[in-house]
Length: 239
Image (cartoon, rainbow, N blue to C red; front, side, top):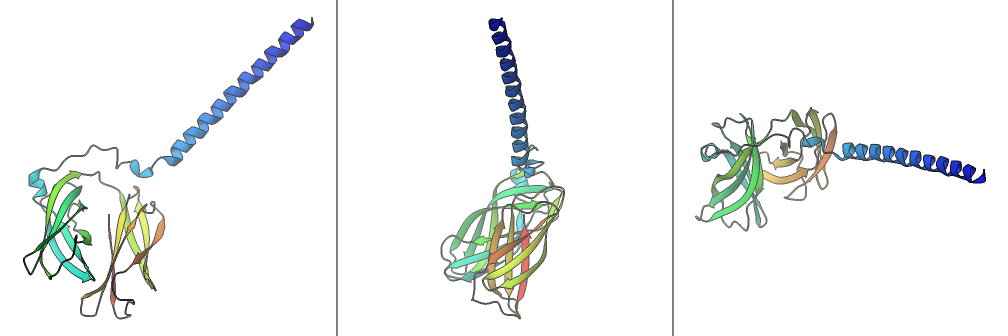
């Protein structure tokens, strides 16, 4: 009898251990699934789930600079270019481009970057030339090196307002639509009463706010210490 009692106790103990192990596995599986859902990038859809199409040379040739201007502060010359592609038959494309400026002395200055275009819209491209530019820029051109299509996103970022701060400009953004935007750039251009650029700043927004939410972005400015109350502050957003 003592041996049978001991066997029954061992069996009950083994059964409880098995049930406890199964319970732990079920809980652990639920936790892993929850972590996967929480850590999944909501911007992966539809951005990463659509096959991309490489643009042809003919399609790349339709990309052009519609307007541009430059502004020098210290040893750095910045450019602002509005890019368009009237003949492009895709809703959204991403391009790797070379920006080339030719100064009045005949010297050329280049830099490489990327830009996204949407059908029927101009895209703002901002940056700075590599190295010093010793003479005013007389011409600015853009050469697309490569490009591919991107899925159309049902998402938008809009500027809700801005305020001038001691060290720059604070911009308020609002995201709307269904799809989140990966990264955005906020460019602040300050102009005098005559339209000349006096200050310039650019700041990435990464991550951009999720649809239905907003965020504030602090943009530091190149230029003189203070922004005059008579200056015009223009906030531009690109993504």
